[in-house]
Length: 95
Length: 480
Image (cartoon, rainbow over all chains, first blue to last red; front, side, top):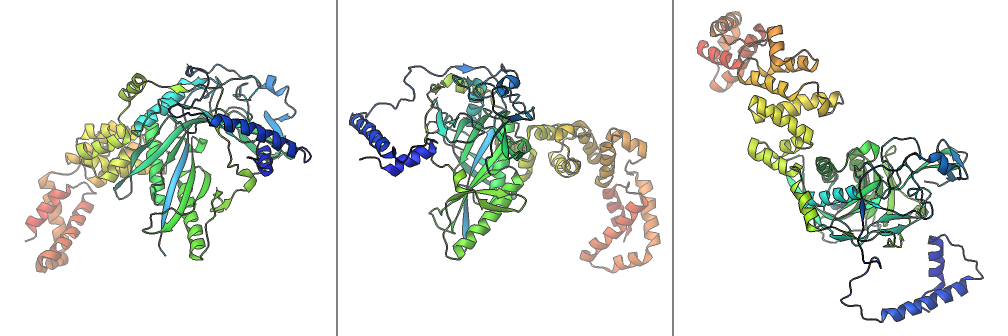
């Protein structure tokens, strides 16, 4: 076992994924199997290989600094569950 | 025990682009809520970021301004956390390949001394939206206009040792970025926001103590107060034999204290990974060189030039080179009047004093640089005394015209006619027999002091218009 159940619980909490108590053992076992495979990959010699940030052999195209988007608030807010004074309303977040 | 404060600052600088870093929405401040939030900023499914060239250019200009290594191949990463004003669930930022690497720049303290502060790195990222917690029926309101605004996060080395140095650093940074024109530097509108990392250690020690991080301090004054407060708090803990807890705190300006943020607000596990929607940004040497060639004279260079060319002290030079507008104004005054030191004095004391009292910016000064230079020229050619000049300056400030107009209209021209002055001197000597006697009996040291009395009397008689140097000479001749 390379990953413990409490780590799975922590990652799930950070990712806002709820895992039922009855399933947590099975999820842990399966992720552990994936990690075992990653471990096999890590056996490959990568010295001298530059870390890859993106699989495409290309670099970022840049766009000119121009305003191209107008105000479409009404269209976007038509599909929002709750809006007021132009704001999107969400469950209260306490500061 | 004496403690040394160790401070590192993280500044979030809003870059002065017209559109956002990854979308074509406007970045104008103060627009109605959500009218500048496009599908990309709202994280609608399938939307992809496209990087703004101007944000890259500004970041590189900053790097050149602090003599830093420019990341020729920089990579964007996702910083993951959940908050309603971050609709994607991650912020696009940079982690281990930032666009600006290590650099440093010079700050000037009030005594004119300078220090170099190291910059660890500066990276590009997007801003989040704004949450409004006033009562929307128990809910929070979200405005995503700010979401996607380009930020440059500038991280300093823990090189700062006091609140004064922290403020000097921020002022120098503000000066640099406004010279470069990469940010408006408007702190009231959140263009420069600061996180403070602060720890204490026994004076003379080389190891770092446990630090606290104070989030989101938004004015020079609050930075100073937050540091002073945090120094007291941490030194009390250490004096009592306790240990400082590593945590994130908020500065509460109203109560002038820092307090811990609730732990659930502190997501310190951001699970960074490379942003798959953006490719590495590659910058070539020609691009960097073209920007380097186009850089303006920067504040530190200007300060050094002012010291050399005009013979100013370090502090005066730093005040006068603080903004491009002020520096240009000062140089125009010098050009008109020809005396750099008197010009420095007038600009700093009279002009900046009036501007501060009137809460005006140098650009809005009612007295133009050429006119102030004209006034100083009249002091230099002995047309008026420094004291009268202050009256004339007041009148210029009120819009009564040029120095020459006012001197003429009010009949303020200094009396340098030796005949007229001699008769005033005679009158004063005749009217103050007792003091004359005292003067004649006094020794050399005391005489100097007593002479001042007679000069004052003559000045009073002339309504301040007598040439003080000539009065001094005449009195010395006659009082024998």
